[in-house]
Image (cartoon, rainbow, N blue to C red; front, side, top):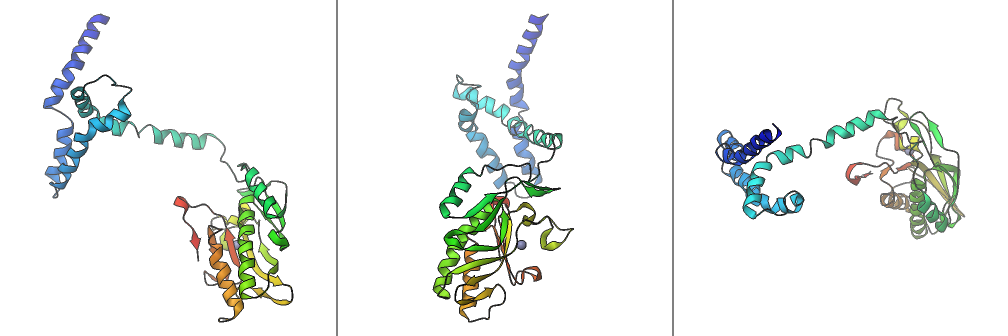
Amino acid sequence: MGRILAALLGAAVVAGPAAGQTSAVPPPLSRVPADQVPLPPPRPDEAKGPAATDPAVKEPSGKEANPKETGKDAAKDAAKESPAAPAAEPAPLPPERPADLPSGPAPTPATVVPDDTACLRRLERLGVKAEPVAPLADGLCGAAKPLRVTALPDGVALAPAATLTCVAAEALSRWSTEVQVIAERTLGKAAQTFKIGGSYECRGQNHDPSAKLSEHAYANGVDVMGFTFEGRAPVAVGATREGTPEAAFEAAIRARACGFFRTVLGPGSDAAHANHLHLDERERQAGHRLCQ
Ligand SMILES: [Zn+2]
């Protein structure tokens, strides 16, 4: 029986291509749009293009299956398989991913532990004063490896200290070195202190409980209210008068922040940011930044 079945199956397989020539799948597929769509000329051309190049395309990807086949056999197989292959390959992938998501507990910022080894080393090289503090976990808010940052490069103090992820602390530190250059150029003095309005805080954006969680909720954002200088009046963000060195300083450091943070908001962005620069490292699709 097995032999007969095998023989029958073999016959069926052999008959497949012969029958396929009359009821070949690709031609009907390529003809359907030609009959239905008012733009038939370009579509058949496109449909024929891939079919003609299928053997070439197939060789690199399908070699393991047909290493010894001749060009003609490969062309036949390509004609048979090309309609099914594209549909079969992507199909299994999507179902697997959704299945994984609900199976385990949803990761929270407190459970996603970043490898900060290199980042911490860079902070040390920069001369940043920061020490690890206990993991933060408050519902969906939190951070697995927060730092308490008390001073930036060149001894610039944070007042008060900020609780930040290493990534955010490094961005703040690197930006601060640019702030110092701009301060010396526009104001003639380097800053002594960065006034911090807030860092880690479990809240929605703009303090709106119904809004998406702010990056502050992940210790990934910081609000800079202003700067103090030795022998010079402090500069408050949003309080500088147009045409003054202070305004030039504020505009320049804000523009520079866009090179270090993925989000930069401040006076003019909206009412909630009228008196400070909000800087965070929110990750967005395709690396998009929000720089206002
Ligand atoms: Zn903020």
